[in-house]
Structures are given as structure tokens and as C-alpha cells.
Amino acid sequence: MQEMSWGFDRLQREARRAAGWATTALGFTIPIWVVADSILVILLVACWGVSGNWRERGRRVISNPVGLSALLLFGWLLVGTLWGMGSLGERMLAVKKYADLLLIPLLVSMAIDVQERRRALLGLAASLVVTLLMSFALNVGILPTGGLINCDPFNPCLLKKQIPCDPSIPCVPDNYHPVCEPSNPCIFKKHTTHNMLMAFGVLLFGVLAWKSSPRWVRWGWAVASCLAAGNVLLMVQGRTGYVVLAGLAMVAFHMYFGWRGMVAAVITLSVAFTAAYQVSTSFHDRVDLVATGVTQWSPQTATYDGVTERMEFFYHTIQIIQDHPLMGVGTGGFTHAYALHVQKLGLPVPTHPHNQYLLVMVQVGIVGLGLLFWLFAQQWRSASFAGDATYGLLARGVVVTIAIGCLFQPALNDHTEKLFYCLFSGLMYSATDPRPDART
Picture 1 (cartoon, one colour):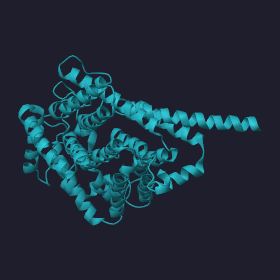
Picture 2 (cartoon, one colour):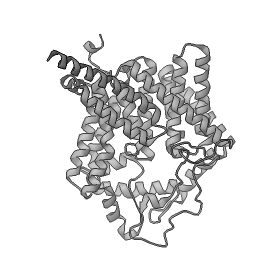
Picture 3 (cartoon, helix red, strand yellow):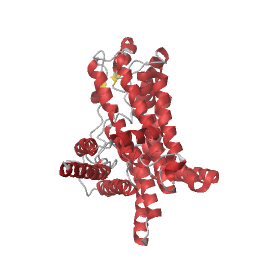
Picture 4 (cartoon, helix red, strand yellow):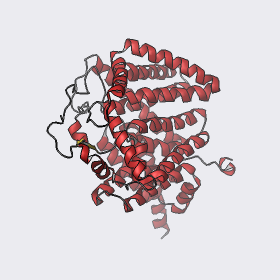
């Protein structure tokens, strides 16, 4: 009996150790390989289940404001399947998309240590360096596309259902072109995702440069940070990355220089963005498209440009929210509600409104939106308990990255963005405990 007990304890220890290495591997694969992500998440959950110690883990989640907030948000989204317009299949698919939120309390319950967190961050940094080098190689024509380097071309047919099917509505716009090419060198992911992760990479590389001791390593990370900023602003066409980079710069300047740093950040960003507008054709054209799209948009006309398309979705989604402000149309009910709303207009129906805040509110009402904001607020407030100042900066950087991403896409539904957010939220806040006796 004693031998069996010893063997079971060893199995639990090895499972816990394997779970830590799974988070390291996930840090590396998230920017690169969806299939590997799925396998590693299953492995992580399995190891978590085997490693036991349930009572202590439950206590950790309940006492951790970030873990508890994530659990409450997912719980409300799950409750949202009990009402609304979506079919059973649509409701279950929506719950499946939000299920990664459970990774946050899962990792919190494991009490991830500093070494495991650092390994995962280094894994992400290594993956982003590989992506960065390949992006530059693609930009200068050294690297051909194909295989893993295959950013899918934009095709509205894949994003919309035409209800009713109207042959007069073009499926592919006249200005269609593939998004993975030397003039838009995104690697592994679509350009929006590439630029969002690379913008976080600018901050991560800068923090690693600050924390590294050998001079050559420090300079290497500093150069990588500068190259990543150039990749975001001058090369890849993801406009979300421009805004994320600006937000992260503001947070970093404020953390290290106080409110005077905000003034310095505004000046620095103004100079950098003005220079990018003058130097980079990609940046210039993407910014001009925003201005043109805003002036040309009409709520009664189907559009396929990225800017006007989002405005169209925002406009009609807000009208649906006005009809269902408290409880929403139910988790998974967006597509059906939108189809009914625009039926007389003959407009195409998206699978989401390209805005996570609107998607949460239209599904589960003001309570759901409040719980999402509460999760972000708890992360921001708890960042000071995540470790030293650099870890606190990275923790807030994760929040800023996803909070800005949610303005322009359903970042908690898209595979790469939500897994990045949930994994590193769980890792960065796993050891946080605001109680004074927990830090002694």
C-alpha cells in the first residue's frame, strides 16, 4: 500500500512537471502552428487532471481575483446558452470558442513558478524572432511562400453568408489581392494577427534586453525590439498592430517615467508614426484607407473594404443591442439575430461583428460586458503582484494587447489571439495574491 501511494505521488509530480513544459511549448507554438497548439492544450489539461491536489487548487482560484474573474465571465457566457435565438449547434460552438478562458483559472490553480513563466516567455520570444527573420526574408524575396508560410488570401465568401443569396453582391472585391506576399510579409498567420503579436514582441524583446546580463545578449534583444517595431510599422499591413504598438509604448513610458513619460510617449509616437507615414507605402496606404472608408460608408449598402465592412457590422450590431440591452440574444445567437435584422436590406451576414465588446454585449447583455471589463480591471490592478517591475509591465502589456485587439476583431474567439491571452494571463497572474500574508 505504501509503495502504491509513493507511486501515485510520483505520477502526480511528473504530471505537474509535464504540465509546466507544456506551457513552455505552447509559448513557442502559438505564433506558428495551430495543430500543435491543440495537442499541447489537451496535454496540459490532461496533466492538470492527473496532478491532483484539488482542495488547494480550488482555494488558489477563489483567492485569485484574475482566476475568479475569468471563471465568472465564462460561467455567464455558459448561462447565456439558456436563452436567445441560436440553434443548439451554434450555442455549443460559441461555448467551445470561449472555453479557452478556463485556461486562466487552470494555470492559476497550478501556482506556476517564476522559472516556468520565464521559459514560456522565452519560448514566445524565440518563436517571434523566427517569425521576424522569416518576414524580413520574405520581404526581400529570399523566402518563397507555401507550406506553413501561407497566409490565406482574404475572401469575403468565407466570412459571410449572403442572406438572401444575391448574385449582384460581388463575392470577391475588385481590389482583391493575396495578403501573403513580399509587400505584406506576414508569416504563419494573417497580417492582423502577425502584427498584433509582433507589437507585443517589441515590448517583450525590450524587457528581455533590460533583464539580460551579458552585453551581447542585451544588445541582441534590443536590436530585435527595434526590428520588430519596423516590421509592424513599415512592412506588414495589420492596422491593429499599429494601435497595439502605440498602446504598449504609452504603458511602458508611463511605468518607467510617470506622467511625464506620457508626454514623451506622445511626442515619440507622433514622430515615429509621421516618419512611417512618409517612408512606408504600406503604412501610408493603410492609414489613407481608414479615412476614405469612414467618409464613404453608408449603412444601407453592402461593403467589402475592411474599414467600411466593420462600420457596417458595428452599426447593425449596436441596433440589435438596443433591442436586447440587458440579456442579449444569447450565447451563439448573433448570426441569427443579425440575419433577421438585415433581412429586408438584403445585406450579407457576418459570423461576428469584428468587435469583441459588441459580440459579448449582443450575446449576453450588459452583465457580460461588465464581467469582461472587470476581468481586464482585475488584471491591471493585480499586475503589481506579478513579480518585479518588468513582469508587471509584461502582465499589463498582455491586457493592453488584447483589450485593443478586441476593438477591431473578436480576439477572444480567434484561436491565436485568445490562446495567447489566456495562456499568458494564467502564467503572469498565477502567483499573484493580493493578501499581505501571502507575500511574506
